[in-house]
Image (cartoon, rainbow, N blue to C red; front, side, top):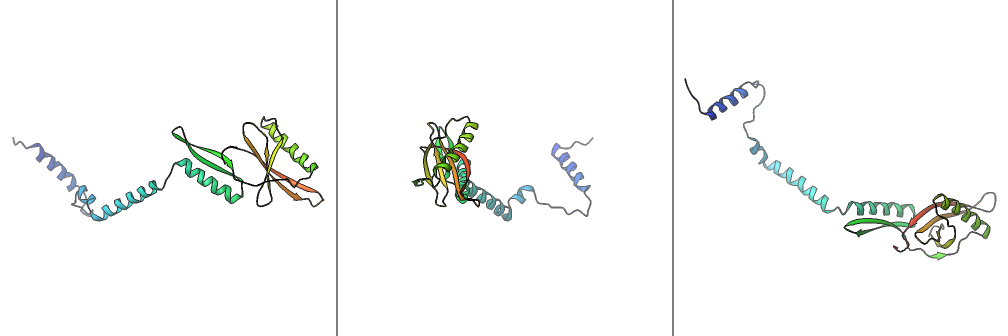
Length: 185
């Protein structure tokens, strides 16, 4: 009885497997390590790793990226509010702040002012806040007004748009409330 070394038996078995491959299938005699060492593969791998590293280097915290995008959209929409991103307790937080706007007097007459404050009161009550006292009015460059409601805890702002009515008088549109950090601007 003929004995064979274990390596020789393994080589014979692997040879018999490759012999079963149809002759029309092209055989590549290169090993996997030869394929990885090819210059083209190195270039693709290095390029991919370089792109990945550059993209990571450009990334700040995800919160900062979100805040930047939100601020870009707010500015494009003419909003008087922006997001302030700050580090807090090992993390990052965002808070809404109002941009610096000049204080002014509302263009609403006394009757219209009462109507607007009445509408604000309904909204505030629906938010479980019992306030409708006007603190100040900030003027936006486009003619809209930001009415800041007196509140001890939050800055509460409503964007008020006044337009002449076709029937006479003045119509108003109310957008808000916007809660913001009073001390964060």
